[in-house]
Image (tube, rainbow, N blue to C red; front, side, top):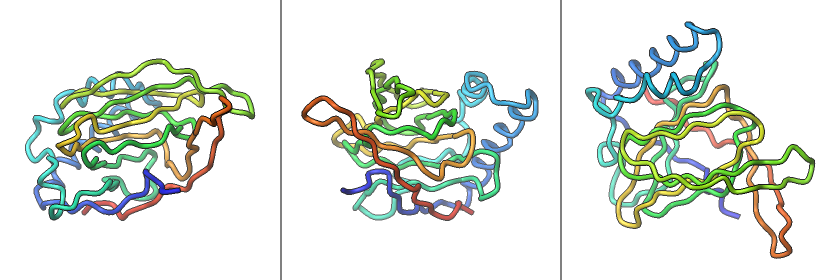
Length: 200
């Protein structure tokens, strides 16, 4: 099976570093203020991130005409959280997946992302219940927390790529994907997160 969450690395213009440093400083500040993360407060603090100077855009990040799903961290190993940029080709969708119990925030920098949310049962045999779908445009976000969350993300456009910033409350070394059998039973598989070097 193709791992739809596997990544290749984005290229970044030199001016990008000041934008990413500003984002990371804001996340650090939010954590230092409360000792833990209030995801909704973080979303408020990042509400204008798409208007900051040097905010990355799809065509500034993509190399060449052949776009592929690309996931590149702006944090370095050893950080208390993870912040990848994700480039979504037109129509690209992830499988339904969890985030190993971490909290998270997904913010659209360019394009449109559809997020289908599921409640995940705590049982050994996974059961997923749809909680709805939201369509996010530039500057919009979705957030989640806890071990009972799973979702599927899809670039809503069939013609244009999208670019998103994700922030996770820890290091996402592994995650589970979920697939519904014809008989109505959910199956899960564990995947290791494919790592690209952090942008410099």
